[in-house]
Image (cartoon, rainbow, N blue to C red; front, top):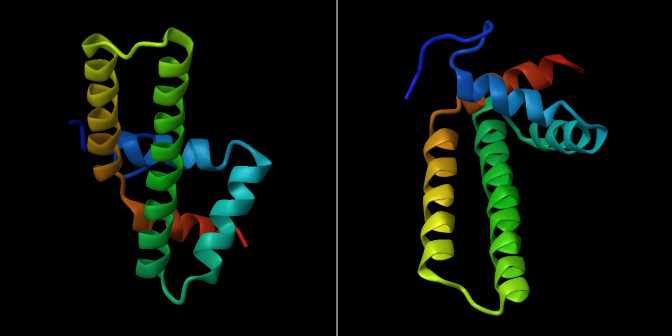
Length: 109
């Protein structure tokens, strides 16, 4: 995985997550609330990571449920694709520098 600096960020994954978290009013408001309520930067980063992972995990679970509902079957092909996607998302999120995102969000206020 590419961990070199990207667009002034520690790596591409960190840049991408920050981009998406600051792309809509609802997301930026939620992310700011999380990092500003935390007692310190490290707690802010942990809480932000936990929230993003939960949010994405819930979305992926909903996609899986809709696929089952629409097809009335859940083949090994869909199960394999879902598992691969979940694993790929987790690998990317593990590469995110959450402290840097929390720091930049705190500096916005």
